[in-house]
Image (cartoon, rainbow, N blue to C red):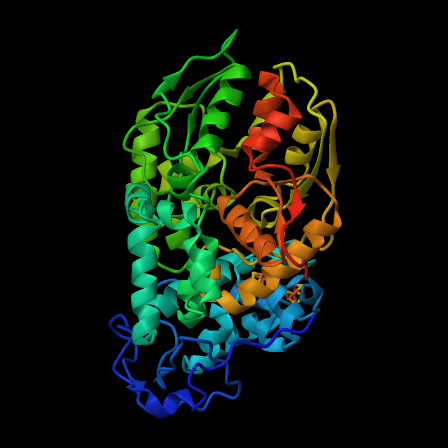
Length: 504
Ligand code: SF4
Ligand code: SF4
């Protein structure tokens, strides 16, 4: 598959219109120089709406947790990770592979300045962690990437539009109430088909790529269920086996309230007292994975405080990205004397919902639900948490369910947190690739454990002229436990699969 690597929007060398400033507040004792020379990076790599700063920042990294040299040196340059790296698959460029990105981290650690091209290659990484799964040497790329991204966010002067767009994303997405309020007027927009009218008039195409991506990724606000008042405490059915908390999430709470409701019902049916602690907010996953370290730590501390107070045996999460971040709180807060130990204890109690149901052993009777489903491995579940079998086991334990595997399941769908908003072109290319593979399964339902993946694949399928109902695995389990019919469930999830346009 050939996909153009995102280019500079204006066509002219970006450094010709760049203004270099003094950036990167280096801690005392470290060099503070930021030279205002034009970019001389060997590998120009700029994307749409990504102006280059033209800066060469010395030193590339400050002293606050730069990527660890010992972790960098674990990479033996074997290249086993390359075929599973989505950006390497798209462009075949070494510097857009895990090995290339680690090479650039090493350059920076060893004294090369931070340049536009370096930042661009790191920005284009989806953080999907397929390279972690593939690496025979156990390279902890997730730690290297998180450390690098935090340095970039502190030290690199992004272009004005990029900065503003990122500020908008992070003022919105971690706050479900804001999300719901701001997207409320879009209900009529969808109901009356305004999107199609604007598209046919050629007006949508005039929007910047990032806003077009946002429009395409909008959840179906007509059928989506807003935050349902999940009770603070839901009693266990039958003998109580555990007391667990549920994270309601941000996008999940704002647009997929039905997934949270199903999670509570299934856990209660499996003998758990389920607590949804009031005052819970964003877990910080989006911030942590984007290098916004301080913000991520603030969200993490608050999450720990709120769930600790509820005195739970486990904290159950139904969003892959959130679970992956929460299992790493111990590492994130390792320098914080007030939270380091508490964070490690907290992380040890976190479970993905499919993982948890298998761990305690299912007891609620499953009713037949004759469905052929394609199961999509969310990266932060499969690669980030090593959870592949449990969701499949949960589905296969339902009489009548057939699970079809998706080709190239290890390749990311392009969602990757905020990636499909800030890097819409490669995200769309990966989404279309995933949509083709999903369609090829012939399944009547797509099942995924992450709201970001659901939105991304839904948008990609729609672009390809396919309508396919989608669900979280816990919703399928819930329908089976409640004895819902397959027809009723599919209707509730948007109707039977169909080709509604020219499949491409
Ligand atoms: S995290 Fe994903 S996109 Fe980034 S280097 Fe690894 S495989 Fe490639
Ligand atoms: S990250 Fe792992 S798989 Fe990739 S080149 Fe380095 S050692 Fe090999």
